Length: 136
Image 1 (cartoon, rainbow, N blue to C red):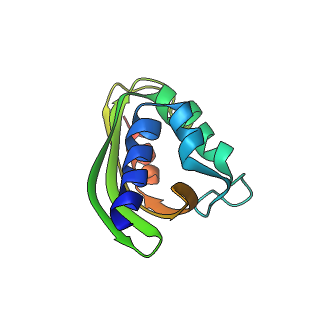
Image 2: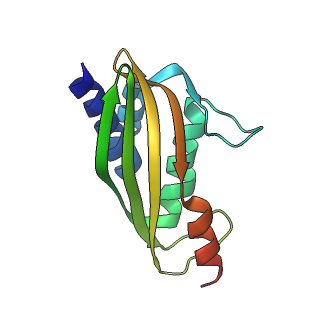
């Protein structure tokens, strides 16, 4: 089972985040999914995740790539250390395009249930990346 759970998370990162495949997103996301890392007061369900990838990351970063460095599975959870990278060619959370390379380091924990994302917790370096882009 741990290998299968890792594969669910790998597919999500490559097919959904990197490639923007909405069909894969729908197949891999539980209807009652909860994103525990959503900003306070913001939606934390499946659509908020899709919105972040499709309407925040993808328009701002061309050549979007997700590199998985490590995956550890225990019980029903998969922890992944990854880098989301691309070229800053569109407005990114209010920061106009700089043309600079961007690399966001991320550590995620995903609870997988019945082959789907059920819950997510995560930390990332996005605030540091945005601060550096703002100074460009």
